[in-house]
Amino acid sequence: MIRDENDVTPAVLRVMERTADPRLREIIVSLVKHLHGFVRDVRLTEAEFREATTIINEIGKSSGDTHNEAVLMAGSLGVSTLICLMNNSDQGRHQTSQNLLGPFWRMHSPPTPNGGSIVRSPTPGPPLFVDARVIDPTGAPIADAEVDIWHASPLGFYESQDPNQADMNLRGKFRTDARGRFWFRTVRMAGYPIPTDGVVGRLLAAQGRHPFRPAHLHALIFKPGFKVLISQVYDPADPHFDSDVQFGVTEATTGDYVRHDEPHPQDASVAPPWYSLDYTYGMQRGDAVLPRPPIK
Image 1 (cartoon, rainbow, N blue to C red):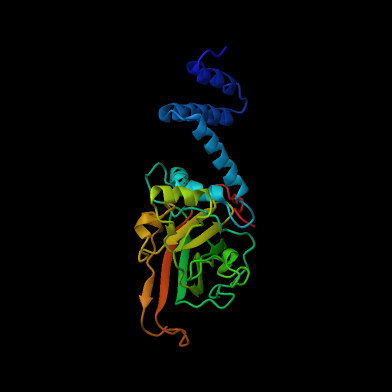
Image 2 (tube, rainbow, N blue to C red; image 1 turned 180 degrees about the horizontal axis):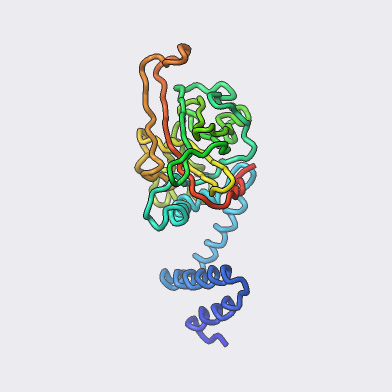
């Protein structure tokens, strides 16, 4: 029998501890302890509780085929990066190429040969040539890995946000060669503001935070026998590099986007300035399980 507020948490925990699945039991018991502790810590009022449930409902309603407000909120609170590093850095003993999936990954990007371009509609901007390697924990190359690439335009829009871009513009799927390499041409991407017309935007405004992500290149790398690698390579020249609204920038995912003011050595049609990025992705052995796409 519950008599006062001190009886609530023990009563709930007694029920939660009957959960048959051990992992679910561990999660739900801890969740109740921390959630009830939070409510007590801030002395949550009834009005604030009603507002909180309204916000949760709004997050769900504002998510759809082209936008995922829940993923956006998790990143804006640093939860996404915390989970990523907890699960991929061996308790901080080594750095990892693993990073945030973000809300804009789509399945079925167009297969593209190495050396090809992922610019599929007119997209003005400085050319960017990417040359990358994929290696295992010993440093050996991983051949025949499937590499899904996507990024924002020089105006800061993914093609799912921009009617002026062709479908699948700035997206492509590559295969690593025998040396673990893949390479392609694109345009230099720009940083961009995350959507601010929902709950996350109101949170940022209330905190006086800017909504910008620094420029970055996404990759999702799949190879049986290895944990799927989800990565972003960030440009340190971006003005928001040190204040990413999604807390995604790590030392291991910082790239070197080199500016070249001379003609391209292999393609005379490339007018300077152009940029190059060399980067090595490290994969860990494990189950190759693709994530659920946040948008269609």
